[in-house]
Image 1 (cartoon, rainbow, N blue to C red):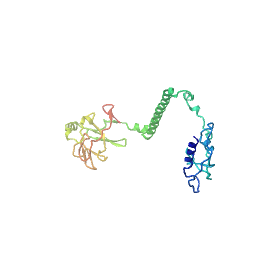
Image 2: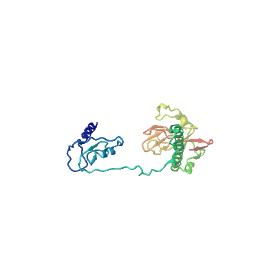
Image 3: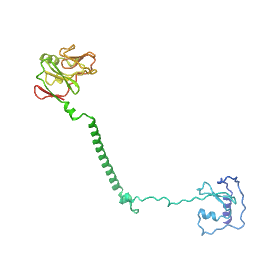
Image 4: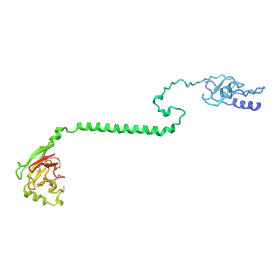
Length: 282
């Protein structure tokens, strides 16, 4: 037993390593002790106690400082260092007042209260999300309202027009929402002629009934749908129609494009008749 233990120590002592020193290190041979090395079982078999009980060498080094394998040299004066770690240095504050009651007891099973805790957290998250969304909606809505037209501008967008002052065959031009508005008193001949036009011949097909609620009154914007010029009433290639002098677009007496570069008919604004001779535009 003693010889086997001694041979084991010799095999450890004859190994080589790179110590933490600038000096040259060579493999050293050692001589065996004559007396057997026998240790009492009362010693604790820990790395520190084992180093103290080694029968040879007074200096020890450890490879990399934290390795569990120790390489021993006999009577070689090399430098070494000891590092210690204290777990009581960091003072971690207690967060028990922020924890739930179900998780404060270290002996309790947290899995039993997991669903209740998740339900509470998810409910709070959902409630905060809903309230935040509603608050953001009203904030954005209020901001957009400030960018829109005021109440006076909205009220000015509606105008009442008396139609009995417009002679037959004439076209009245007024300003509505910063745009010219055409109101034409059409004759029965013009109404019959426009309603007889086949839709297949129109670039932007619309019937005369769709554009004029009451046959004798045509209400449309005086803005050419090509590039925004103002057409001239009772001009062009179509009797009782409109002609754009900018690029030569021709509209008929129903405000429909018949010739020229304009792609669409003259726009018809929203309007309603308050009586036979009063119309509300807007």
